Image 1: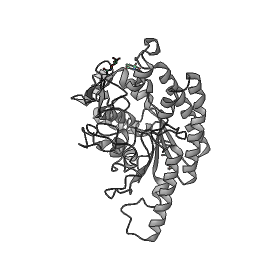
Image 2 (image 1 turned 120 degrees about the horizontal axis):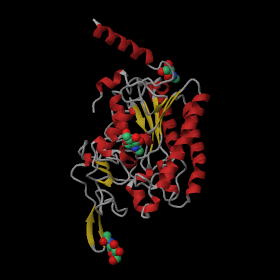
Image 3 (image 1 turned 60 degrees about the vertical axis):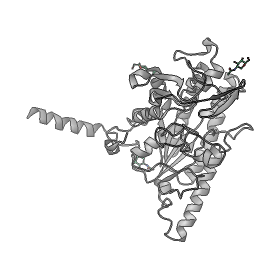
Image 4 (image 1 turned 60 degrees about the horizontal axis):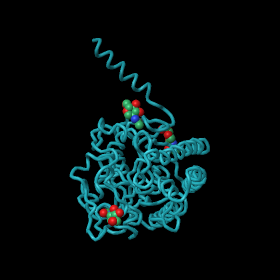
Length: 380
Ligand SMILES: *[C@@H]1O[C@H](CO)[C@@H](O)[C@H](O)[C@H]1NC(C)=O
Ligand SMILES: *[C@@H]1O[C@H](CO)[C@@H](O)[C@H](O)[C@H]1NC(C)=O
Ligand SMILES: *[C@@H]1O[C@H](CO)[C@@H](O)[C@H](O)[C@H]1NC(C)=O
């Protein structure tokens, strides 16, 4: 009798301690996502601005799938966890994509601030939000015309009940370091976040009520930044990442967190969830072997060999003539041993690990329960 009683007791306690207010409920009819390459599922490639060649996509899709990864991104794992299909990119018009369960406006290389003259992506946050506004207006007009398009388009109430996700800001910081001092980069952060706030307000005015904001990762740990800014050992921190870059990322995250709190206070009919990606990724890089990885920083698909296997002149999968010799940036045999795929982007294995940590609910503010029903059928 005693064991049974204690099981019942435990179950009761679990229910008592479930947070009852303020935390996110994982039942969304649709997802609308905004961001950069961390969550681009085909936007920049769909726009014809960039192309990806094999071995991109090799670990999951078998072919480059518009993603800067060997396989799935965090957003793909989160969609899966919510029992929703992978998000189609707004500009990926070929192959009759369905936008029924949402739309992805994120584009690789995008910044929150308006693009500079050398920007990879013209789709800064403001433009992504403008794409959404046009998307919504067109959907509502088409729905009003009849029912034939129902299975391709979100229903009207999905815009209010959907989840709006954000993962952007990394390129604002990374880009600024090429032309600015550390203090100038820090001074830029409030301006970047003012622009972010403007976009969030536009979405709120459009009816968005559920917001999910990823903070930015330890960008000083990316081989691209170590190769360029980390040649002097005194510029590296205890993880052997570029110290100033990580300090800037932390400063950005503190202010982004404060902004989320402020918006939550202002918009009492909404939910803001802030997700601490930085802590998850830096833990992964510091303690990689504990999580089954062999290389925390060295790139799987690159050129140049250890310690970084990264050369900014030859991107993953590309071939170039250097000093009269033809060189190709090839992939390692087993990308699941590497945290980093191409020097800028994480491997699918790392994305899967990060997603599993997000879904514990422990890295969010407010935290959400790890007893959510959707966790029972995780398809990792
Ligand atoms: C915000 O979350 C609470 C608690 O989960 C929920 O009751 C409420 O409906 C949510 N608000 C919106 C606008 O979805
Ligand atoms: C690495 O793991 C140790 C032990 O769990 C932990 O204390 C430390 O914070 C981790 N490092 C990072 C950077 O998260
Ligand atoms: C190309 O040649 C230059 C000058 O000899 C040398 O400094 C550089 O390291 C060489 N690059 C490669 C990729 O071998």
